[in-house]
Length: 330
Image (cartoon, one colour):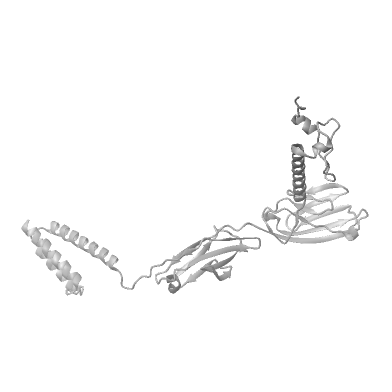
């Protein structure tokens, strides 16, 4: 004879999940198994599994609730986007009748009187004890905050001030370098045109700190450049820091007198220019004017004190003679 048919519905009805204080299940009278049977076999394993999962869910919810409620107290230096509470204190923990929070630049931030909020700036809220909560601080929140608390008869029962400074997250820097003619180099720690005056720049040579100041540049001699060591920089303010990738500097030192490229360019320019001028001059004066052209050129050179023994003048003379000879042959 087949045994009783056990469905998931019957199993679920046979278990009542307990409160945290009592983790032992209760077996209903209509359950398909007795308390002794339920403590053993497959059903017992299933029951223990359900209890374990229930405990896990309960612990998760409690932890989430604790995290969502807790908020740090506002320190002096804050990163943009931080949520924090600015504490308010009264004498002998007296119950306030009126609370006023003011900012040194933005004026009234929050005013509360007899259980009602009269003024509230965007992004802030009042805690139960009168403290000021910032949902997400921004750069404009930098400054000094003052609170005053009075009782129902107008007596001041609390007063204080707190100063905060809000900073942006430091962007990741990049190392850039420029070489001079003598092989020296200037390294610059570029931070995407950041205008944060609080930025400090640290320079590292092969992983070792060599400079730590506000100056974003470091200078290397040609000897240091030739060592081929990696350099990196790190930018930081009171709430964040970022480090660049390492860069190996490479500079070529110019050798004095090494102007072969310039000389070849000038030589080719002179050759082409002289040839062009001689050809145009010869074409314009004709056969009869060649001698007079040469004579006038020589005379002009003598009058101006030109050194006819110089290489440049010898080249011009050779080219002029060749042009005249070519014209006669034509």
